[in-house]
Amino acid sequence: MTGWTLFFMLVGVAFLTAQLFRIVEAIERPARRPRRRAVAR
Image (cartoon, rainbow, N blue to C red):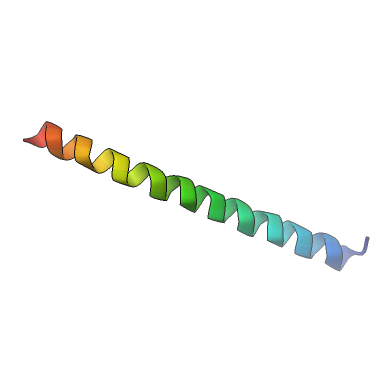
């Protein structure tokens, strides 16, 4: 494995991890909003 191969693998893993966290946040955000609105009323 060359240095460039390792570099691109790390970049790919970081990118996929970031996308995973974005998906998790997108799932959690709609679930939080109605609860806050219900408590505010």
